[in-house]
Image (cartoon, rainbow, N blue to C red; front, side):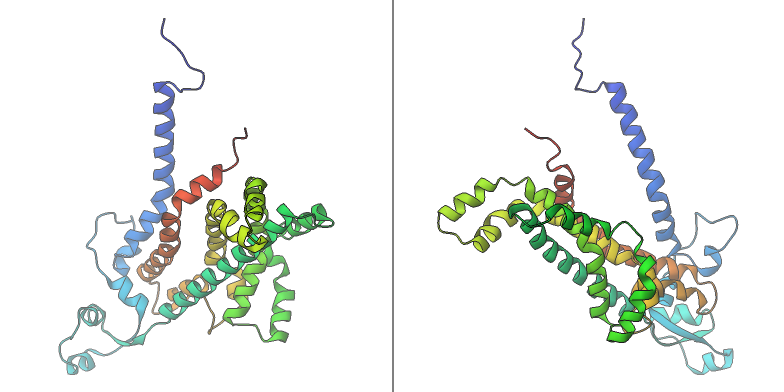
Length: 313
């Protein structure tokens, strides 16, 4: 009679679990793969029916994403002489010329500034607040924690009109500072609750030993608590960045030019010279990269952070 373990899954269970995971991964990745491939299609191939899986790749979508173009007559194009660059040659095939750069680069830079700026501020303030709630006797602590949590109980867009009126009065509309403060205010409740759980799991004896050795409270926090809470900080930063990076409604309502981010800008590409789906797909692909790279760099901390404190001794 073979030994059987109630904790070790059988080979059949492992095979079923592995198959389900692979199927889930394929289903989840299929839309992303289709967007990535569409970015290398020509406009006619992108809207063909039935959809083309095999096609001749081209960089026309990326050229259209980063440039503005104007249609010209064949006589005018012939008077310009041969194209001097590969991207001019692509545009000339559509009987168009490059009029200048598009606004995608500027909008992408705004997303980086606002997304990472609000993430840093949310994690910084959330760590300080979570440490205070975890280590000190704060009056009405439970009520304050519930109040912080209650800010997440309704969709942020529900307060869009009051925020719009307030920002217009304060001169914060269409500014980087205004969007950073807004996203920080939305994310800080999530940061406080997540980080408090992580800091609660760090034994207070570590800090007491540091204080006995002559460290100040700030030094103990910086040299003892922060290294121990690194996994929680990384996990919280990823969740905060995902919200700030993908947020659409506030960015559409409160920005129009100077501080407009990529999410409300990418759909406007559709109206520039027709249904330019390859340019939209190219913009969506490039927009996904920073969050993807950031998550990959912190993936070890993310896995440890999600499971941190799951097993208690």
